[in-house]
Length: 329
Image (cartoon, rainbow, N blue to C red):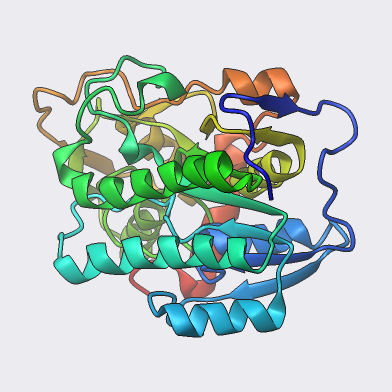
């Protein structure tokens, strides 16, 4: 591979730059919400999908990963290990940080060694500084330290973004990076309402309705705003990126709109048919600030936008909750 010119950017609004048909495509962390959605989306691309679900291979062990890569030789790699699902309040541990840093470093380096033609690394929107002006623009990614509550996850994710840029500069690898907004849909694992987790809220309202309760208390202020992207839309956006974009710059993938927790709770209540009272936490100093909405101008100009309405996304997520597979089941 030869080094690529710094800053060179290519978008295709017509035929894909890199068609996936006939390619062997690796999805890392295939068992996550985003990973499962990617498997559904890739089924329409005519490619051979190789999935690495959590636990099937220790991605923090270089020898194991390099041996697996050498045997399977993926041509395109989608790294969804840097979760876009949100991890509000996750306790920081040395083991967790090491695992994330080792995983992304080893996967990206192994992809280079086996000659992967394309790689897309996905980071969550928590990589942006907390006081960055909304909408969050890619150029402001490193303008200040990340939000304290997610700083450990953000440090690892930023390292992955920079690795893709460095590999492009030095090795000429066609590796690209994206930042994704908070993602929801069937398969959410969180039982916490904090962070605008629709599945957890839908499950709580469903239980309250079934038990005949007249109120549900939430641990978040009604004014707090979130940008929520349905998982299948994110998967579609990531496939769009890996097939139509080549450049060093990070690209935002989001819904382009946000919603307050109060509005989200009412939408969830309508989806469930819950008619009781929803109680919110008192608003804190930052709860009335604009939401962490991503600037998606680059994706919009290239011809992509999220298509699933919030009502439709909640309907599909609630159908999954009713099946007994949702949070708290």
